[in-house]
Length: 119
Image 1 (tube, rainbow, N blue to C red):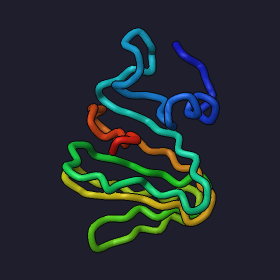
Image 2 (cartoon, rainbow, N blue to C red; image 1 turned 60 degrees about the vertical axis):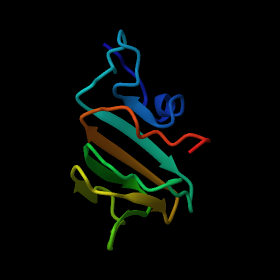
Image 3 (cartoon, one colour; image 1 turned 120 degrees about the horizontal axis):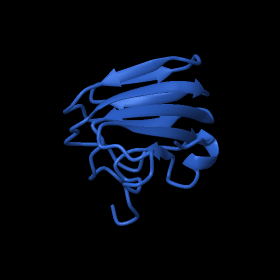
């Protein structure tokens, strides 16, 4: 069992609170699903587009105003609870129009999508 606070725990691991990247002995380790509590200042933008996507994802707006970008379409999440779901093979990016908090759930949890300083 693990009891925590999404905001506090997320700050320790780039927003991620559950997934393959947690230690195998940690109850938050999962290869089936990953969860991110994303806190984004106004103007925050994903460093690069996700390509070769192998996961399905759900992104839910908790607060703020948040754009999820897809080839040929931008989805604007503006009311608490607005969400978007996309599937495997869907390229995407995002930008926070206002200071925003979003929760992302992706499945399965697989390595290879982290954006590093070298990316």
